Image 1: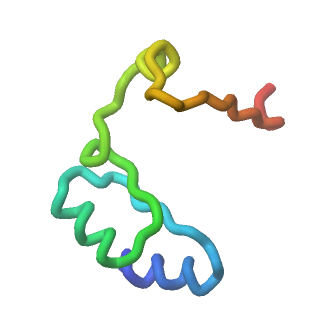
Image 2 (image 1 turned 30 degrees about the vertical axis):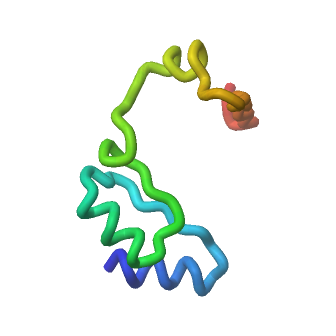
Length: 71
């Protein structure tokens, strides 16, 4: 099913994201299927936002995301 959804997305010109990537085996399967982006604990464990904002990677600048949906 993941392969079919990924193919449909690509046919429509949409980049695809796989969630719940928990280990290297799943990551490899999804890469072989051509999924564009992966997220989950197998990519990186969750951390408090302060870790990112207080210690960004060298050369990394943080950008704020703004949404008009927020009240």
